[in-house]
Image 1 (cartoon, rainbow, N blue to C red):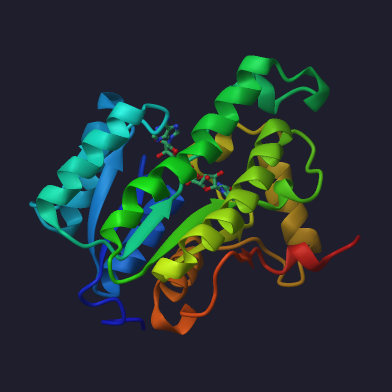
Image 2: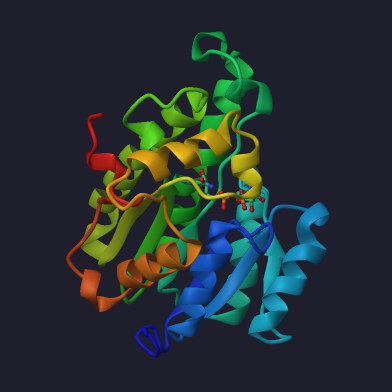
Length: 258
Ligand SMILES: NC(=O)c1ccc[n+]([C@@H]2O[C@H](COP(=O)([O-])OP(=O)(O)OC[C@H]3O[C@@H](n4cnc5c(N)ncnc54)[C@H](O)[C@@H]3O)[C@@H](O)[C@H]2O)c1
């Protein structure tokens, strides 16, 4: 459907853990649209998994370790990227983490350490990665980050991750302002619930999915392939004047008041 619309574009993808990852769905869609991609993996534990997946794009698809909470990893990753290309057009940020216990009880109990860890890995990383990618986006670029409604409304158990998503969306707006003069656009996709590794950590996740099926206008949440298609749109010329926005891909759930 989108064949060729990202032909000649080069992108970096952060956040593939396994075949269910939203990052994988968006990477596949970017690749099908013609983009060349370079991947991170979080650490040795995930390396084999990610390597096996990205081989689907060709045996020589580059992938390098990058724990986004470490400045030295980010620096080393982009050094490797510069060995493959002198220009970047796309970056996907599909990374989040909060300690499991912070996603179970009540928000008021969130320890300082869980709060700062969630905000560092899930939000500051967008700032640090954008700062590293921007100098390579010499022809403009599109940065896409993944968010969730829990950043603007209370979703029980989403807790500190909701606060992180609010900060992520706000960071995307400030980055959009800073980088706009370089024709670099920064947008968020706010996805409805999807069964992934990260989602498994949220207590009551399957009842969230059922809630969307019962209450969303489209009577469902979203498919990862649909997130991929939206990722292609945001990366394409069709979105050339869209920046700092949050696009809901959630079966329409966001419009509901009851
Ligand atoms: N699954 C959902 O229902 C849903 C809904 C809306 C938004 N999101 C968001 O989508 C994004 C992707 O999550 P997902 O659901 O695909 O789950 P996932 O577990 O497949 O992806 C999360 C990724 O974050 C990476 N990560 C965590 N800590 C890291 C670190 N220190 N350094 C580098 N990478 C690190 C993991 O390796 C993993 O690849 C997240 O931002 C998540 O909040 C998910």
